Image 1 (cartoon, rainbow, N blue to C red):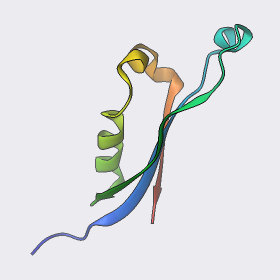
Image 2 (spheres, rainbow, N blue to C red):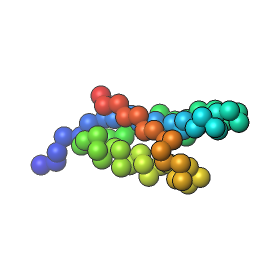
Image 3 (cartoon, rainbow, N blue to C red):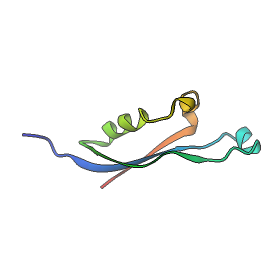
Length: 70
């Protein structure tokens, strides 16, 4: 018997530091709203984290993953 699967949506957002903001860098969506089927939010967070573009891996403290269950 398979476990219950739920629908989630996630989006990945980059928020520039204060210094970067002064230099004209703006907040942006790195990964647009994406649908995912999973058993729990933790699994979706892992899936989403793998989608972070390589050029932002050194700025993970400025990357946010927003997850919404249905």
